[in-house]
Amino acid sequence: MEKNEHLLSTRRFLPMFVTQFFGALNDNVYKQALLLVITYGWIHQQAASVSTLNNLAALLFILPYFIFSATAGQIADKYERAKLVRIIKIFEIVIMLIGAAGFLLGQLWLLLLALFLMGTHSTFFGPIKYAILPEILKPNELMSGNALFQSGTSVAILLGMILGGAVISTSQGNLLWISLTVIILAVLGYFSSRFVLKQTVTSAALKIDWNFFRTSYQTLKYAKSLPMVFLILLGNSWYWFYGATYLTQIPQMTQQNLHASENVVSLLLTLFSVGIGVGSLLCRRIGGSEVNLKMVPMGAIGLTVFAFYLAASLAFVPQQNGVMLGLNDIFSQGLSYYHVMLAVTLLGISGGFYIVPLYAMMQAFSPRSHRARVVAANNILNAVFMVSSALFSIVILSIFKIDIKILFSITAILSAIFTTWLLFRLKPMLAAQQHQTLED
Image 1 (tube, rainbow, N blue to C red):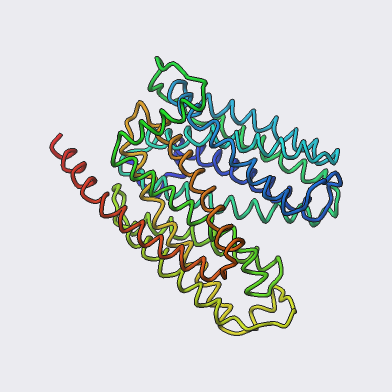
Image 2: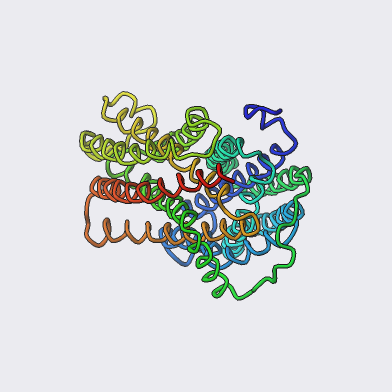
């Protein structure tokens, strides 16, 4: 019997892991490159402000999750999923050719179109990848597989941001190199998808409803008819609300509270991503191979305690009298900066503890015939919670003009309330489910 530690050496798991890795990597290379060319004005047809364009870009990437998630879930349940993965990866190559044309021709509308299409690509890929995992993994491998997926995604996001920034900065305005980079990554993703094993079709008779308003409603309604699964989806979506609230504020926090440069933003994002990866792998080691809630309370406590720790650390950062600190400077400025870095890392680790078991439970307890549609419902809820996070932050920071430390503290309190309610409701349901499984 194969051991969990050797999942990355199995034909069942490795091709799907690598395909997912290249997809997440390319997403973030492209998004980071687009952000930089907009911010530094290397695309000259910019009729709107940098802030407006950046927010428009964020909206265009998340919009497909609202529009297409329900349809994507139906398609993933109806058709053979390995073939779908390859079709989607061919679509990614076409998208990157459009993005490359945008870079080389200096056409912002082409770049934004490619970004919307990348969001669409991710929307259709999501239900497939999380529906495939329970098919290619044994029940006692779900926790390990999800931990590896989550940590791999965190590393891909981090490397994507670094690679996108590095290619743009070293090419000194020559956008041919970033164009080649995203195309090559898309081709590598397609190549790895060729090795994904053929999957069993679970709902061949399903008739796809192309009315996305109706299907989105029906998909959420179906998920709600599964009380335990729906609670798990709400728990997943809270993580995206929480994470979006913190990650979105890191650049502003770095500038206004730490009085530091863009390089320090990259450092903090790196620490957060590394933290998630470490938390995911530790969750796999400490929590065991069986699908369980053991690590979720620990993660939930960390998401509250370390948020207060971060807010308190920011309160002790000294004023710099208009001087912006570089990456080297912050390591010689006293313990307050180290406390901020440690708090961000611990938040990432707590996030890994919290999210990995919930994703494993979502896959384990979703009906096999509707598994991709449950993942689609999860994506819709994630998008709703992320947009709510943006609106929540705008109200706190821009309308009420409240300090960012207070935003972090309010989010910590909300997290404590929500996760306490979630665990109080979820534990008896999980116990009943496990008891039923033993009886069967």
